[in-house]
Image 1 (spheres, rainbow, N blue to C red):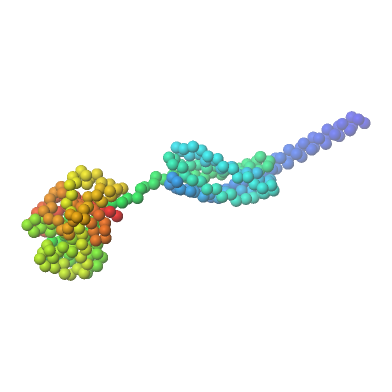
Image 2 (image 1 turned 180 degrees about the vertical axis):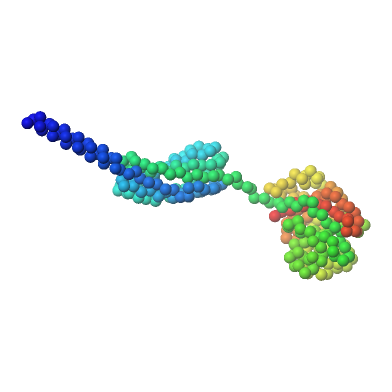
Length: 293
């Protein structure tokens, strides 16, 4: 009889173990999804992620580990209250300096130590610095003509050139014109407001707007002008002198570097590349312009 009881007990224990194993095998791990899955950002930016988690068993935690190319890793944990089976986790990541990409792994774990993972990747873009200076090269102006048909006018704001006639019925062209070229017995750059002093009469009577640009000669060499980039206007600012400025500058020659200030208050520099002296349509001046934005 004792043997029968032991046999029955053994069978019961085997059955219990079988049911327990079967139960373990039936357990489903939790799930996790992350949005966004990819992002682009600059260093110092904050990127926000949302992790959505759910599971049949009680949730324990979400761990976020970040590994970056070019930087150190970080880790963060979010734990759940007892009895939670679903949750939304918001996670903010500040992009560190000196990295090119960051991979974040989100790991959810439940009380049975079952888990699931999701990843998100941040591509770190190179931040392009703000530019302070606009640059226009090889701007070619013809001398002023009696019939207003030559391109002797320039707008430093965009480097465009146009004739007097182009602007007669175009208020926008008049408003942005700030450099005029002419040759008398000498080469001149002047502002539209100086037309009367140059010609002895109001040769621009068809324009309602005649901006006054102020010019002054500088001691800058061509190399100094060429060294100025879009990222700094310091040299431009220091080259302009209110005390020495006038609304026209005469006897302009190749390799001169001339400072100017527009009616809008923008300062700039003109480098004279070439002058072909004369009054004809085939004569010209070629300049480079660097001006504050």
